[in-house]
Image (cartoon, rainbow, N blue to C red; front, side):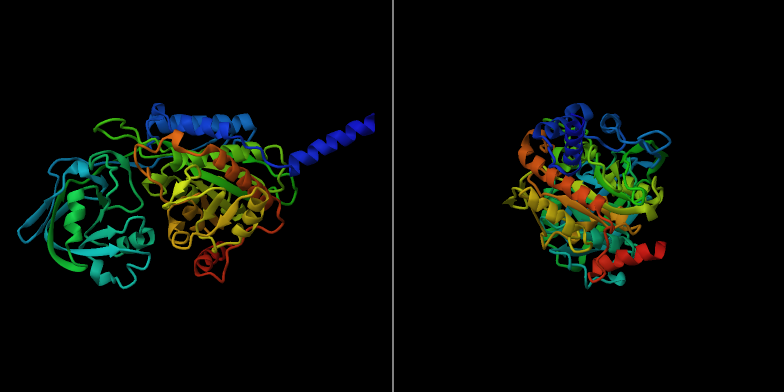
Length: 474
């Protein structure tokens, strides 16, 4: 009898470590429906809704049994700058001959780093049709000029924006047909790219379309008071699943997602809440269920599950973590970030039982995740036109900037309700999301159990850049 009990106990233990994952669609539904509910008011950084989401995540970490790594707490407290923009004297017009475009303050989102006083300065226009649009742009084109960016639908010029803002333009205006705009005067976290303003105006898009590329005859007049800054308190949420191997438990894999979103509109018809169900309550839900699935698997490496604030404000929360790591960066073996895993109507297609990675070829992470995905009937693939440009979009970028091999897993990049109030929980495909989450959990476990940590791919230009950062830290 004793031998039988021992055998059964051993078999149960082996199954717990090696058996299949069992993430339930209902569990994912519960997480997403709460995080994207009206009660959390869009989880703006900072807000009471964001604090409620942080408490919810921490309560699940506690329930799962994760360690609280910040002096016994799950919260990493940060005090970023909240920027309030006075509306006194706001005026924004662009004139070209007899045509005059007037932009109202409620059609603008973004913030300034100082006062604006621009009178009759010629505008430089740049159409952005792909990630090579700014290859011929020079510092002389940009410095001291107002820049008007006109992106093609679906193109997000992250790398180009960093390039342009580094050349000190007078200001940067970007046409954004997306209806999201909470008004120029709404308080917001100081962005990583100060001075970028988005114009949410059909008239502005039509006006810009008629201008030629390059330096135009159109003149910008823009006046705004200097913003007023104050410190606020927000939190990253972290929980650790301690590794079981004496040699590898001090090496960490990070599984992360951002738990903030856009808050709510100050006025307008209908529902004012930007629910953020797919972006990114879905990523948080998958992260929580991966943590639950792996809690009994005894991975060799430690896994730190992390929910970041402020991604929508320019990766503010993850950048703060990169500069103030709870776990020393040299102990971080890799990061898998989770974004937009619930909607299957993405990028103009229907994607089922499949997901992709940003910077697909930057690291060798895709090899391990792909093998795990196949066991669950899931296809891992590279979206050629989006994988590399979107690497800078999410919180994986902040860890890459300090040399940690990283990527973001997502089902797709564009979906019909992106950054709109209609991104609600009932539109997600939870059975498909559970399938992807099971595959990701198996992939994370495989990476955590590998003797060799993830590596940057030095034969790839993107990978080589971050590999050099990692080497220089040692």
